[in-house]
Image (tube, rainbow, N blue to C red; front, side, top):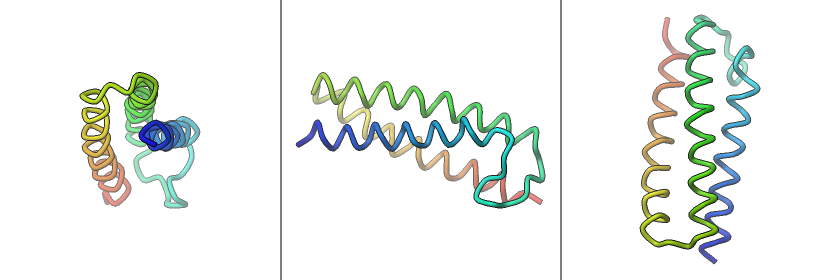
Length: 94
């Protein structure tokens, strides 16, 4: 059961990484790009972070190592929070 849940977590990270890969020059959520250079930079940064989280979650799903699973889930929650804050603050910046 844990392996399936970690697989779902890996899939979520992969979808987010692919979203950042395809939206380096596109609008986020249909909002106009007020700072295109900043959007490209932050997209590349989160692409690398989400790709690393995808690999980490995949390794945790395969190994079933309990400390690695806990570290992945805690780090995933923190990374998701930081991603939401940074992207929304960039989009809402005047």
